[in-house]
Image (tube, rainbow, N blue to C red; front, side, top):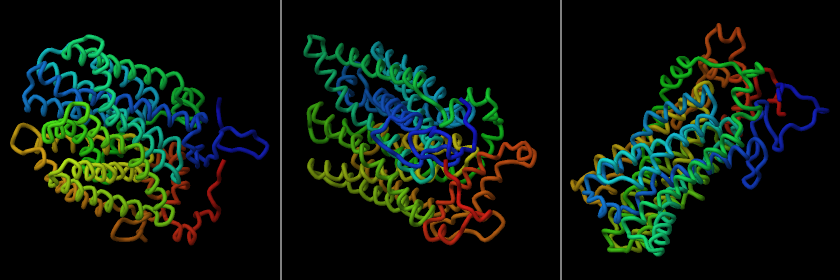
Length: 506
């Protein structure tokens, strides 16, 4: 159904939630399944959750798998790196695919393409095959980009941080849930008579089936945008197909995306690293059994149920009062404190203290992830997918570098590696000070009084004069109008839109 840009009071409501002029939801109702906004939310986090379960399903079973396949510490380290390395460039490609084809098709296609690798894990017989299945399964983590793109396309600036934070946080929850699920499935299969070396193989069919089911649900029940799917809107003339080269160019030339990629490498990248090492760390250092180590390790990932959503909620709350500058300051403070707690985790020596510090560290680390994607949707309107992909890819690069430097082989003990990882977090987070939006300011200075000093000026730089003549920039104009809230309450109260009227809502 074609939905026009204008409505009258006599028109029946088109959406269950209040929306703005872009038809993005202005409220986030967690327990609603209203079409299309909240349905997209639930489909996105559940499908992303399934990919996390699959990608880290091997981690809690490593003590069994390493005995079966005769894996060395170097083999395990290489496989851990492989599990997050495949998604580096794939995340940038996924962002571009979302910009061009929509998050629904891009997400479901990738999930279906990576599911066979999860099945094949049951048949591996060597360190090389173990590395390869973890590498190809790890591509599924690229669905993080489509999740964030989808939420940014469905929810307005007032709640986009919350929507992004909850969707990604509950998806990341799969990294903790798999620490509980896989040992439990393994034990059940083992109790039914299978040997240990057979039980872990059968167990991998569970995450594989789950992953395929969520992909089909996204295809059948999902919708790209509030007004419909990309293909449907292009046929009706309501959405023009953008040029790949220009979308990609405006994304990769925006320096803010690269800074966010660096800092995200030391919040989400650290989370991926911890997911890979923490169960084995507690198993070996404190002589725990497999299930106990898995339960403790699971608490790190399970904190995502509140921590990453809290980051998004805090980001939106700070923006209402202090604008974009509030988002940036809060991100820096929270992520720096996470680095301090990471250093502390590497220094404590008792089991109880290690668990307590690990849980506090997880809260700050994951909240920083949510805070990051409270900023990302405002970096670029035209190249939102590319910016999301670059930032998300930075998370994987951070995980790769951290594991290569600190957790591959026996150069450092795991506790020393964790301490040094904390130092890296604190250092890299300082780069947030360099992010500056001329219309809103940055951490250290306020908005510019120069040529590009308003929202529409900033977002119009992504369009040339010929494109503007064709009207291709209209969606960016609507977004600029709706993003005035990033000025903060005090500034927004003193500044009206250039036409003297408030933004219109549908």
